[in-house]
Length: 94
Image (cartoon, rainbow, N blue to C red):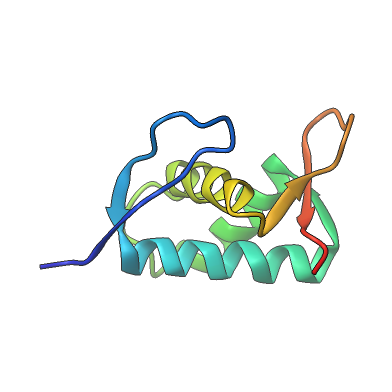
């Protein structure tokens, strides 16, 4: 059986249980995309991850990007750029 991870939400809302394997694939693609571009809008991030994974990922890439992005924010791995419209994202400072 596939190992699961309970995601977190930056606003403290309930997370969801998702496949650990899919979580890791999406998180790695998000981090790679943000490293390459410094900052991306949420739409640009979703497109970048889709470009990387569309031929090899089974599931809704946009749903997984949203879910894993929120979890990564809650864990302090990525952050929203303050006062950005549309929402911009970047890797959190170490």
